[in-house]
Length: 525
Image (cartoon, rainbow, N blue to C red):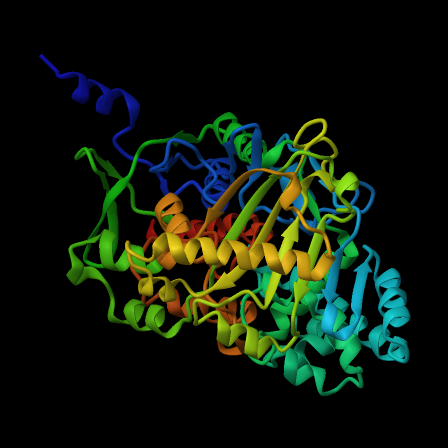
């Protein structure tokens, strides 16, 4: 007589699937949805009891905080839809997001800067010019360069996803600045523009959302993000990120895909360089020849591939060559008054003691990372999000997760409490608003939290840093040749993918990867 466990194994899974997705973050959900829409039998396996990965919310007392989703771009209005809106609509996702009222605010008290930049290219130019006179001509030229990056990369991605090659003639005639600056850093391109220091302090505020300092950040990633955010606007889920995540899960299931929680993948089985299937922690083996991994390459190659001898030398060298992105410390504060009553009148704040991004980035390799922080008040984007008479604020600083190894059980709470106070002090330093009389609930998270909750390698919240040698374009141009040296049938979605980190990139990664899988399937026939 079959045991209950054997019965569940037999009735929960098919013997084999065209594609298995390991990890149910936004990238994994996108990959599963694109695979299901392409007519593949697809199984998504998530170790947690909830899908979404970092795209989640949590409750403390009467407060439900948005964990990590700050902004998603490339959505825009229905009458001029951005790439993300078009994709979600074509996939049949029932989604609802709200447009953030302003684009960003930058506060640098030492420089006397307190500037709120609107969502509009001309509006941004005029606003920055008003705060830093004498830069309008150069700003206009700079945003035209960024526009070519934004439109050129969308064209590049569209052709790649459609299985065709970008036209050299089109690239040369329509996007010459993209070709000219594609392998440059933001700092290198900056030398071609006569910006004042004050102008640069305001213009480059978004840098920390991407990872590297400006002397290492690729212009490809920066220009696409800057233009995309300011031209198409920033959006947040209307009912927390978990609502958006569930809409993706629902769309997967409606398209015939399978999503399973509490299913931790123990091993990815490989034979003669080809994927054979996965086994779960309860011993269940499920056959497939194609895997989309939403977990970091370090986890895949060091912990999941079985046997270890099947891990290609190339894969190890490539992974070791890439720089892991930063992790984060975040202080979540529940306040017993509405935002406007306290004086919190914006959604997105960047606050710094300096805009020397190289110095700030170097400080991420210490346990003193709070010279530059971002703060988000969800209630100023989603009215009433926290409830009547209340509001919520999150304050985030970045640091490298490897630094957290210096934290021991003995000094953990001391360091955590110090960092929480420093984040709160940075908020007061930038805004002049003392939050302590209004605080009802507080939660503090560290790289330890991100690592434990999402199994994020070193607690990293982005993918790998995108320097010029490892930029979006470089990754995609090299992808076909590199794939020949990888395990056949293994692909990455989300942060570890060729598109890179961010919720917009994670959503797009599924479209790119299913095209590559279909190519391999065709070759394997």
